[in-house]
Image (cartoon, rainbow, N blue to C red; front, side):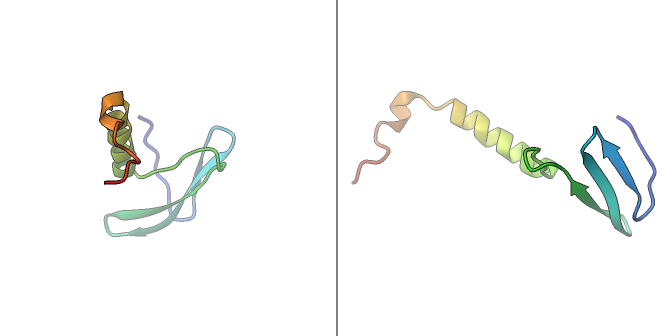
Length: 73
């Protein structure tokens, strides 16, 4: 892991087209601004982990599990 020190309003560049800027620092919280192309997903870690868990669960569904999907009562 690369660890960098930055002050408010300073940035780091990832690749050629992702810019992460320190927007604000209050106590133990840092606000980041992220400028990335629209085709690059940007998520908080806990959101990304939840997406991955749901994707994994969905990949484990068997065809028989969806037999009644879309049928009315």
